[in-house]
Amino acid sequence: MIMCHYIVGLMLRLGRVVFLLLGAGLLLAACTTGSPSAPLSPRASNPAASIWDDEGLHRIGRLPSQDLPAGTCGLFLFSKTPEPALVFYENSASAAALMRIDGALMTIPRIAAEGDVEAGYFTRQIFATADGALRLQLSFETEISEQIIGGALVPKGTLRLSGLDGWDQMRPVGGLIACRQADAPAKN
Image 1 (cartoon, helix red, strand yellow):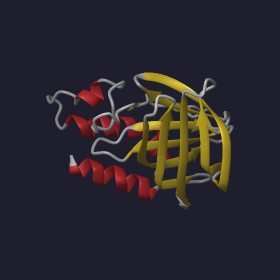
Image 2 (cartoon, one colour; image 1 turned 180 degrees about the vertical axis):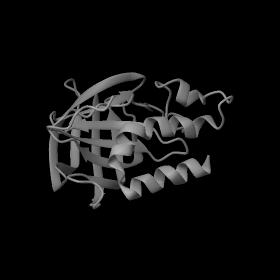
Image 3 (cartoon, one colour; image 1 turned 120 degrees about the vertical axis):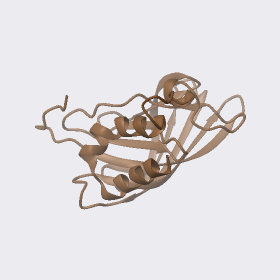
Image 4 (cartoon, one colour; image 1 turned 30 degrees about the vertical axis):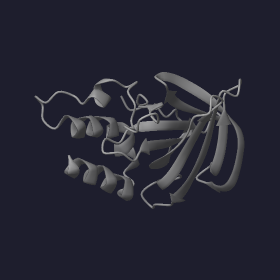
């Protein structure tokens, strides 16, 4: 298990974007199973399950893998947990975040953005549901890598979620910004 986390960390550092985009899901699934006969962990077998174990701070769930359409970039953020999971996705073609909150997939519109623009993304962004029941603040740092053309590593970031009913939580994340050329064929 520790070796799998080392490999994932090394992949993020090396910026193997194509491998990450196409194989990260398979690698993470393989890392969480331990052996072919071992049952999946509760989190791996239930995508709606919480990523974090903290009592009362368990609203964020695992996202399904995301396609990156040709001619766009994507901000992919993973939980910094023993079993890393995709918890945030934003496509450059939309001004919205995709997350799983309380078990439901939600598209949350961006209402503000500021800070430096790194690989096409503002380093500080705010998202909120139309009714204002959920607010998401995102801040992150990037690290340009020669292996990622037009993208960047995101070695650290913070997601802060809050609700009208008073709950509030902050979570560490990391990941990458990756782009797919307009003329790049889809990988099947």
